[in-house]
Image 1 (spheres, rainbow, N blue to C red):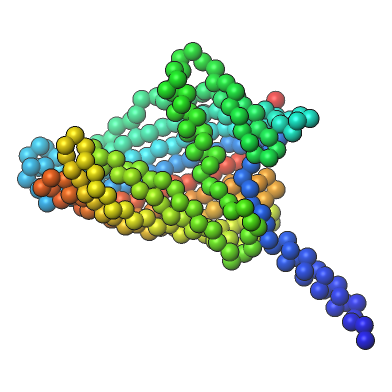
Image 2: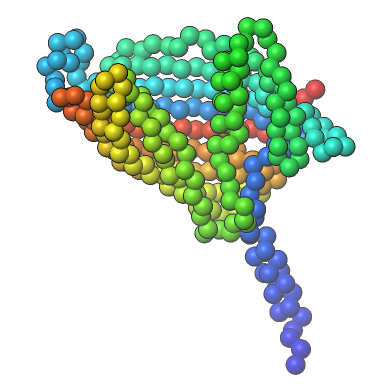
Length: 285
């Protein structure tokens, strides 16, 4: 007996929908578009110490509360693709603002020399980028190196696996993390688990689960420091399927730490929040 036609149609449609729910995610720029990205990051730290009297004698109020804030606006504009499957790409750092407040006293960083700088390059449809030039005589080689490093961090902040993902599946990424504490640079790694929750209206929605553990033992200028810490957090990611690009990524991380410097034991809490938002529009000439 032949199955009813309606049953066959339903089976085919369901199979097609299931196939569409598995997507190979890539991050790459597309020709003839503008990408305007706003990045904001804030970190709050509260620290205390066992050796209170020495710190109080120096005029420092305890506990020490520090807040740092960084806001950056970048623009990326792509041109038309040529016969070699390449197209021009221009990166511009529109604005960078950094502030720091210690026990309520706020200071702002001087104007960043890379504000307004345009970085010219070429980009392939396969996602390979080549930086050609950074005009401006005021920029020395060290500043150009910093710009290239920042640009690389922006492009490689998220790497998807080389296989297609379906709702319910996850992948893990580890990103380096550096935190200056008492003159030392506390280096660690944040583990982020991205879980694909749903695919709707040409967008993919991910949940982010973050964790961090560090156990350090280092020495600087003859001063030894040991430390331990643990952190947890979460976040959300929205990916534009048509443009192969994340449009929103927001996350937060809370962690506690304890550090021993000579006879002083420092304990503290920190909270880091960051938001990346990208608006994609047709490029203007």
